[in-house]
Length: 306
Image (tube, rainbow, N blue to C red):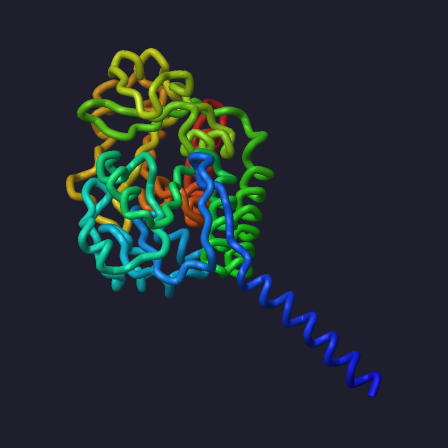
């Protein structure tokens, strides 16, 4: 009898704990520092950036996506998610009709005017704007909490951190390589030291020659690049995602054969889907960049040419 009573008491206590857990609110801070609070894990999620879509799938929440923007094409099943616009313009009526309980927005990429209108819908919004390599893992963990998929999200975060740590151990102590990262050619644009790609360059033992410029994506002159005389010039190449307009070529720099990067044939293009999206596949893009900078080292005078 006592065992039965003890079992019932234990079962009742467990039920209370489970009920309390089920009713507990979920609260995380987004990349603006603002709290995002849900009464329960999100079940209907809209992604307003391709990197966010990748993050949600990696965090184990792909089945909860009910809307996404153009170019949300990874993993392949993301192509089947209904479209709600692109990172410049979204269909607010379509978003409302999909009845989301969480919207994940790209703070830097989505238009401010439409972001303000999204706020008026009183739907929880998580602003994503990763700036550093580890922010990808942090975001995976936070999305896992909001989606109720922490086990998958935490595993993805650990795998990503392991990949980045392996690259850092292999390359970060290598001799520095001066790098000019070309974002666009007309006008000529680059990235400063606050951008995540600058973190990737440093991870590989590189040095962003325009790290100290402002703003995040500054415009530079051809003369400034020639004066900086980078050992390598890097840009993004079309990946599986084909852009609306052709990505810039590095061929223009061949007009200056005295430029170190040209003289040593260190003009590199990396799959834009891997290097431009702050999502777990960034580790693959980083591996490509690290290998390219190692190639640049091998082409220094007195070193065997690969």
